[in-house]
Length: 163
Image 1 (cartoon, helix red, strand yellow):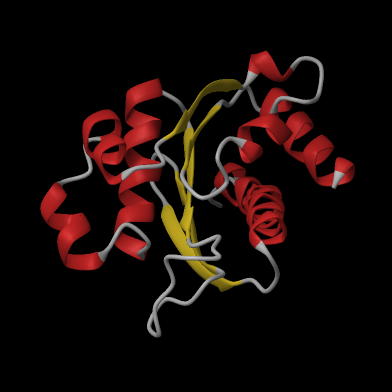
Image 2 (image 1 turned 45 degrees about the vertical axis):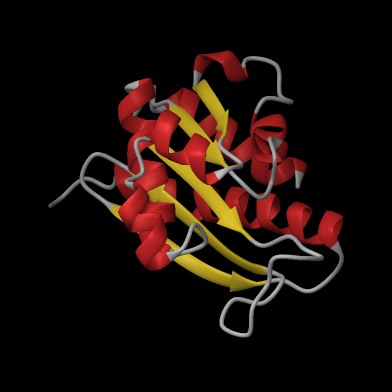
């Protein structure tokens, strides 16, 4: 894990890029991990824990109709969270996580451990869906670590020069 955090740290500093985070099911864990390295203030601009649907609507401007139609745990909401936190913080990248850590809240369609992780940049955005096994704490940790892993693998693609 420290290796991945170090990769992100050096990548963002070297390329003079910054990031903002919108978290739901991880409750601030992702922001905590991204800021544990000295010097992270050079790239980490903002972290929002928008745990309730109301906070997603008021802080991140997620339309209530989108949450009602797709659910707070959905690709569409995760992407909107990443885009909104990026816009709000005026950063190069926004990352968002939303999911069901459990033990309650799951359904047959979206069981405990269902998580969406989204990354939004100036010209690219993506979202991945995951199913993590374990208890609440394990699911939250796996979500934060997978978000870091996605950042480490996907951020370099944003810096490739077109030939």
